[in-house]
Amino acid sequence: ASKVAPGMDITYVLKFTPEERIDYFCDVVCFTEREKFIIPVRCLGPRGWIDFPDQVFFEKAPVKAESLKTVLVRNVGETDATVTLSSQRPFRAMPPVATLGVGESMQVHFSFFPETAEDTEGEFRIDYSTGESVVVHARGVVQELAVRIDSSAMLMDPTYVGLFSQKTFRVINRSDETLKFCFKQFASASAEIKARMRFGGFDGDEDW
Image (cartoon, rainbow, N blue to C red):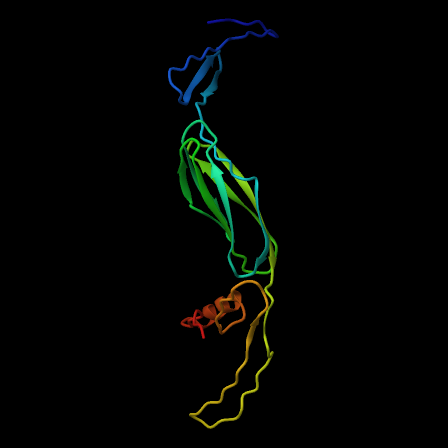
């Protein structure tokens, strides 16, 4: 027990002698006549640390197609590192959980799947099993592919009931990307959802 006069201060020296290379936690409690103060003491042992990049940039990402960035990361820390990777759409990281020993390396795949032709910013969150968290900033610059059809409208020939007429048109892909497509009843996902809500049993996922 000690006393200190008004306006004066007193200094204490807290000594720490670890027996293992692990984390230590305790609280120093100080009592006065009317109050109690708790001073948390945290001594952190060695940590694993993976050298993720500060930012992942997707340049000229095609709309409604997946763009992929593969990054080689390494555990530069002093012990094994276990991390969980998470993100919000349209960004995604694989694998979602990984463990690396000291000096080990692995590939992490960052992907970007934009639904609209708008530049997008986001982040990848990396949570370590030891409690630390870091953020990798993500940015995607989106472009529309040079894809068109050779006719904006088609006038079908007259036909009899029970028979059919047909017309032919071409889908022209002038981009460097492989195009996968299907025909939908609606021009956008939002129009499809509105139709489903309006008509109840309507199956808006039907492709042609």
